[in-house]
Image 1 (cartoon, one colour):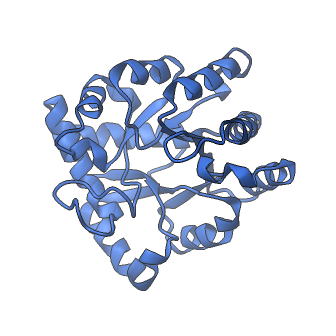
Image 2 (tube, helix red, strand yellow):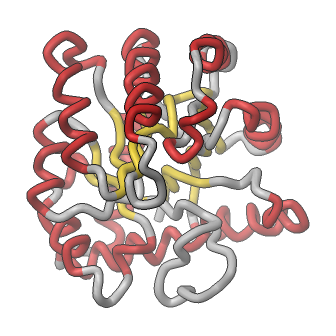
Length: 262
């Protein structure tokens, strides 16, 4: 069984003491590719070092919406330059909107819009963080779709929306990625969304070190090997085999991020 974890943060300090052991566990589990997301451009060197050390790791460059106050034109130029400077950069992000933890709406909208333009210009997919902001994210993406066309594409990461919201982004051509939250007992809207996403738009992730899935929930650190539990639970919800979920999500991840299995 082959798995791709489409969203990790391995450069965080919590992984530094035993990253080699963490890697051994993801390889043993069958995780063959990982996409390392980026919180802010200052992480670039540490993420690039991990991608250089581990050939199965690709990465993104961007600014998280909770750091949107740091965004300006010079950072936009920096993101664009860095995204063009390394062959293992496969996406812009994570970007998006988060109105759960912050209310600086205009700053977030500006940073998000600028990163959409960079992604479209470079023909790279977006990794989108969306929390309590689905209607706003949808509105922004829809405003770009008419002119950007197929160049506007990407992933709704760690998706927590209901089926109606899910359909908004499917209609725009986006992939939907589920994390450990899909294994949580009372996450009924997420369960319903995981059941209705077409097979060719489905992705899985850990968002490690956050959101460890059942049966590891409650641990201080999530890790890529645990993406197997996300796959298993989605298979249960969709009444199919974990092998089918593994095969399809691996194919989808290669499609959206331009990854190769060879």
